[in-house]
Length: 384
Ligand SMILES: Cc1cc2nc3c(=O)[nH]c(=O)nc-3n(C[C@H](O)[C@H](O)[C@H](O)COP(=O)(O)O)c2cc1C
Figure 1 (spheres, helix red, strand yellow):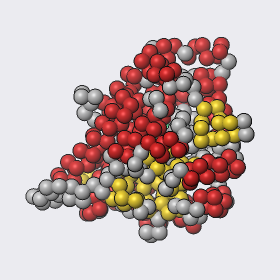
Figure 2: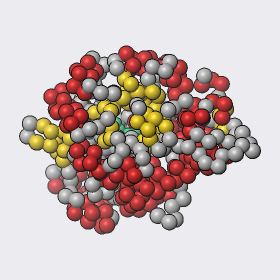
Figure 3: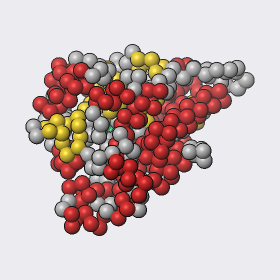
Figure 4: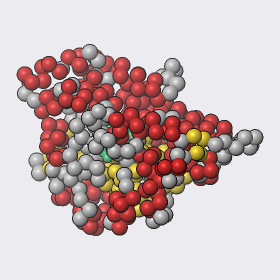
């Protein structure tokens, strides 16, 4: 970890430790991966406007999200199957997020049970919901998340079907999780090429089930995931029973447009995540930072607006806050850390981003993230 300077270095380290099929699952996007690339590139379109010679002896990174104070202006996004990246991956990532004073969001498609993840951290945990298995199965998951003290329900609305991740097809993901032994054969050598990862994976129990998706015959197995996602679409009508079952704050994740922002609020969203799933779903949608002004204008302060997608530097976080996000979520930035070196890698992700935010703020002449606004950036005129 000593030679890791930025998130790209952590990505390289993850690539060295993980088998190709796992690394590409984290790193890849849908189709031509245009949206994936644009999510990061678009930060170049926003230029910073510093105030020089302003004393900033200390910088306050604290902010509040849905009433919780967090020590960093970024949260952990739901990242499915993190347990494949490192033993008990979701618990490890949640613990390190909590030590840094920020929120961890647990994916429905996680390898660790929600109560164990909640117990691993002293900071709040949000639970991300897919309707896999139908309404009764989802209601069970909502109950468990509620009973163990998760503080918000994140409903992801951009996954009526899994995106076309071409790398997963080439790497034989489907064959590896559900194929007959003969079909798996061409792909298993990727595991043998990463013996350190493979040994850790076997020690952690090998191919997992999803403990938060409890079907009639027990937790859902890996093999069922593709088919299950196709039958798990959420529609606005579902929000009525979801609100009744949850009875707490709801975050709608996967909003791209003013219309959907208004619709999400009308259906009870206390917060919105402007997100295109990290470019993993509909390729060709605009990068998230580009649509943030439109969504903020539409919400008119009726819901908190968060953003994810493409965050790789502290300055990216600062720019998103200047444009108007209340906070951001990071996905791959911590997934690379987890894949590279477990908790130590996740801690390095946080250090890199935290120190980047502090340095950018000092150079900007701003001493609190709550004071960041559009006066600190130049935004292309056509965005507004
Ligand atoms: C490996 C991986 C798995 C993901 N799994 C989920 C998931 O289960 N549920 C969900 O709502 N979003 C999921 N996402 C999307 C993230 O929550 C987030 O929107 C995205 O990673 C943000 O972009 P970034 O990776 O560029 O930070 C996943 C992303 C990655 C990289």
